[in-house]
Length: 207
Image 1 (cartoon, rainbow, N blue to C red):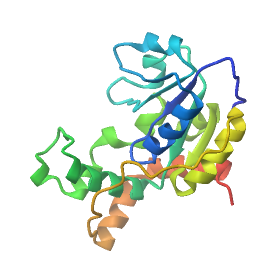
Image 2 (image 1 turned 90 degrees about the vertical axis):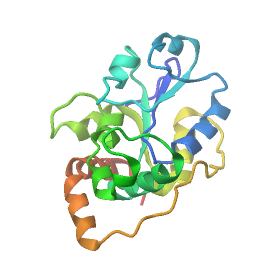
Image 3 (image 1 turned 90 degrees about the horizontal axis):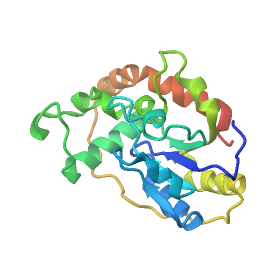
């Protein structure tokens, strides 16, 4: 884990469906000058100490492109299957677009094949398979949705901020029933995601 430098900005790599809006609620208390970075205006980082974005390698919107020179990252990760299931339930009720198929034709399995949803594309830049997990060593902090309050407390200690209660914001929609064999298939599909998640847990999970 990289040591925190209070003289540099903090960049929150917001992986969707990991409790990120709840995290942002707390961090806005810690850092009143906060930026949700628009891709076309990366210079906004110069005006504040905290910035956040759904960075995406798929759309050439990863951290190194959007915020060049910023190298203090934090993120929260989640069990990949549970994250996709949460996202699918949220997407079904939110009206958010998915470019590959019409909503009525988008099964959970099809949804999981949409690569722009991958954790590896949101918080880790252009690295070949096998090197994804080690990229996390460059992060100041990695937390977990499953330990959200505990993670926020640990992050507060690193950043020298007061402990705050984490609210529940932007919850999931209904969870679909998934056949056990399909679940096993999707877990196999998310092998790289589980590689990242397992590496992070081996380093930062609090027992």
